[in-house]
Amino acid sequence: MTDEIRAKLTVASDVLSPQEIAALVGIEPDDTQVKGEKNRLSTKEYAQHVWRIRNGESILSDATRIEQMERCISQLLRRVASSAPAIRRLSGDNLVEIGIYIFAREVPPIELTKEQVESIARLGATEDIDVVLYSEQ
Image 1 (cartoon, rainbow, N blue to C red):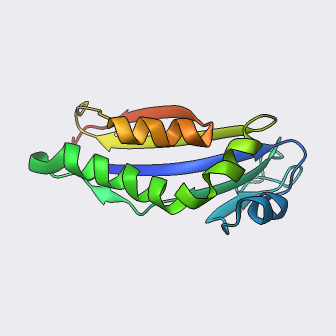
Image 2 (image 1 turned 120 degrees about the vertical axis):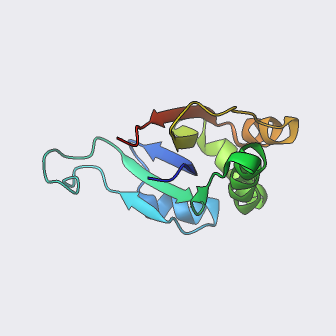
């Protein structure tokens, strides 16, 4: 397994459908969940509507982990920059979250630039950073 980073912007709502969120934000989602529909394993129903966009995956090489992490997050933030006011309006009654997911053999340095933190704040988003460690045994 190679080390990876993924960044996602999620809007979750009890009321607004993914299509309504897309219309308000002006960006078509990469994936959605519809409240009440079964999850992909058919084990339970989704509790909320979800609209989500994500960047591509970046493989983290030892020499450039911080640069690749910065680029991965910045690509996602640039994609939504023009929709920031609409996304911020949604953050009042809905969950708006930037998720950063890191899959690695050891805990990498995790760093957000001042500009990234400001961009996330303009979205009215919370941050969720998950690190999944794995062994090569």
